[in-house]
Image (cartoon, rainbow, N blue to C red; front, side, top):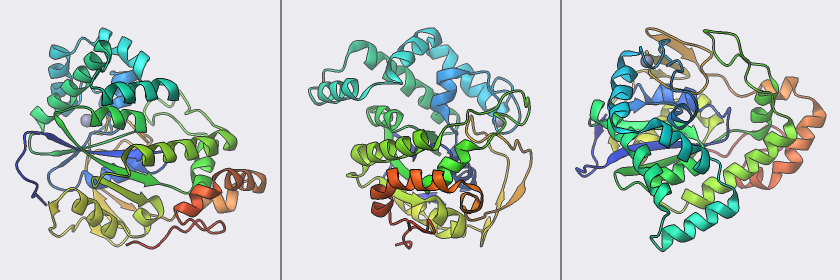
Length: 322
Ligand SMILES: [Zn+2]
């Protein structure tokens, strides 16, 4: 594919927003196959919590041939200790604090330390762009708040992909025990109750729509559409990004051939070297294994938004692709 956007010095980022366990890692691995696209995974969480994490290629970020170069460049420009301090302050803003920030942004009076935080974050993306010049970066940090921060950076040309998965599928996924990493197998990801995941699903989706849905650089994608018709979904995303279509021959029906990628975070239960074939499957497990009480609870909490997104209360089928 070729980037047909007007020439610009800005860094083009496709930010994947949504809820956890919504298939964003899978989507990024697919998008990474498009020439001109570089998928970075959940970069916000890596820079936030642990730079010594493992890349999806199986190497530590400090050893991975891609991230070793990028993190060295970042280290030469960003004071990580100060960044971590500011990140603790700004990455978990309560609604009232966020509203204050929005008002200050309108008045162009952002607090100095917040501006310093944004500048450091922007430097990280500039370091990636320097290494992967002319590539569109995809980032699946997921949080709408982080996406909002990206939208404030003058060097970034932001596109938002709102990835929506049936809340019962999300909830069931959070109930299952899962290793945090296939390499160490020492820690599990936390299990979260259906009540919490349902409330979070509603809050996050409303927030994403509130922040981004009014712009033309916003696209909603259903996870179910992605697994049932990946070619059509990838074409829609390419269209959003003004990528000129060429044959996407790594997608054959629901079979996708994906190569090694360098995602920094996400669903890291399958480190892979070399090329592999993935067969996409519909999101059906919750229908067979989730407790009825949990299905009813999650449906009761989420039904207004489920109707808005055209999910069937019974089957979880989303609306047809446009
Ligand atoms: Zn790597």
